[in-house]
Image 1 (cartoon, rainbow, N blue to C red):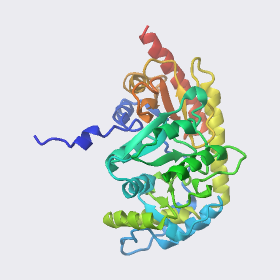
Image 2 (image 1 turned 135 degrees about the vertical axis):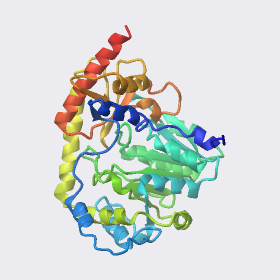
Image 3 (image 1 turned 180 degrees about the horizontal axis):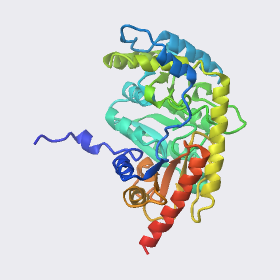
Image 4 (image 1 turned 90 degrees about the vertical axis):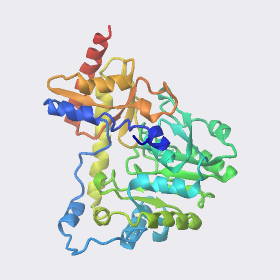
Length: 399
């Protein structure tokens, strides 16, 4: 029997999706599963996007340009202006979701074996995309008792060596919901400028920043305009994860020309997805305002309900729609699998993402889970009630 590749053997399973077979089996047994494991919003996609699908009259579903439709990129320019992000259509490359944007950035900016520094916990697929690109991730842990605050800039400085080529940030962050302050971003800017590094900035959740301060993008940082590579996606702000449309945004012309070579090799981003994405930008302001308020209400609901469970702790997330919670259990990987394989309460169970998958160092996140508050409030309350019963039952079985 032929061997599996070394890369395939090293590729980690997703902490978000690897328990899906157990969830499917639970549903087949007639158990309701509350999905708190994945950032799949239940908020409706804008009607303008759905109508665009209904109205397609093309007789041929053709290739699009490798960098995406100009009309979409021009609309995105106007969208970015609402956040005081000043870019042109030529600065934007449309990609197959934000994941492809980051992988194209890695392949275009780094040679195999070169390094990117990031704080953890971090979105699990960063490690997978880096591995696929031959890039080495150098993690710096942040901690739940500090609210997952950005580690000191001195710790970043200590990690820099002759192989370091970039720093990767995500704000607001997935999985912890941490929002970088302007002061923190300025310190990162100074480090990037000092060592002439790339700054890869995942800004997929910019709409969901729950403070009164203006949102700060990496594109706002003065003096490193050529170093910034912004990663974006349509999935979350328009509740349109399935269209798989993202973007790589940079003012670095040499980098864009390199990215385009890879884009041409994969031909083009999805035609239908771009049609939906372009129409989504036409969603009225009321849609965005409603979505924003709804997520704040869901966050507050989740925090209140988690606070009722003895031994559970979660810092209040200031952005995105995730939080990491510490549970009074021995092992979150075992617990999350047990919830799906063996537990039910009043005909229901809960699916969570073990936080260990968001760290590189073994042992970190061992008693933590990521919770996505993407269900409406009544469902969230029911889900947390099931979680409470699961924790109590699990610990009794271990006595």
